[in-house]
Image (tube, rainbow, N blue to C red; front, side, top):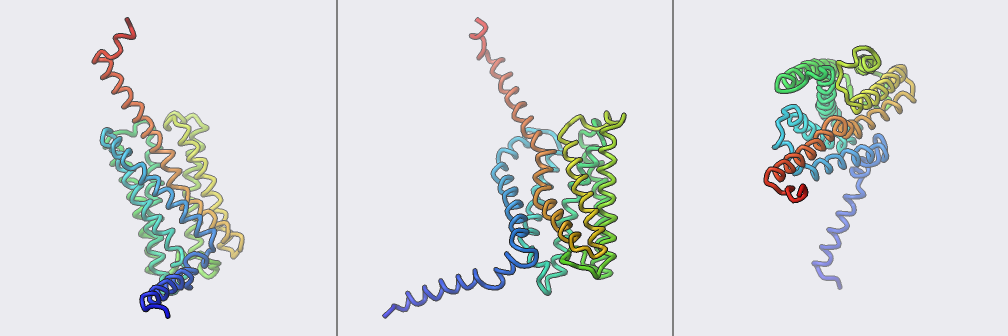
Length: 297
């Protein structure tokens, strides 16, 4: 006969297996938007947070030697919003869970607003051109971004809490046309701003923008993404099934890849430049100490 401990262990193992195969776990991973939608969001956001974590010691070291308050502030905001975005990706099942609609909308509001803050602040920094430096640029950039994002949050909060319109529940929702009108205006404004910057790059005002090809590539990518999102919102607002699918695809691309794109565009070059600066400092110190005198002899 089996011992009592063996029976207890077997029952515990079966309970774990039942939890893994429970409807709750199945709904979290497979239901709502489907497995590939959830997996793409979770894997991409988790890998980026993992990358930031593995590079954190080296990044903090470089930031401690630097004097750029803009980069330090932006790096801190990027960390905070990346963790918040990962939580949003892990809670995808809330969108289709009864009783979780309000929690999902509030989480989505803060996550999207945080990402919009990074997006607007980068545009504000970009439009300041070569004069953007020092604490003045930091105050001006974050002040403009905070004002715009504050208005955006207030308007969306009125829609959510005042009128009860579920802005962030998009599963074939044809009943709230006002919601899609708001998203059309939102995407239209962003598309217009990115389009204006692209126009500046091809006009006589190009010299007012930073001479960095990475910014131009970033603006082009964001213009295309927002133009597609604008088109999909228009289709979804008229009840087109393809519009819902296309809008969902743009949401996945934005939450999965925007933060890495922002890091590559704005922060990666700074850390590489810091490497070169440190090497120059070490070389100068060694040269002053006479380490290279034998080479001249």
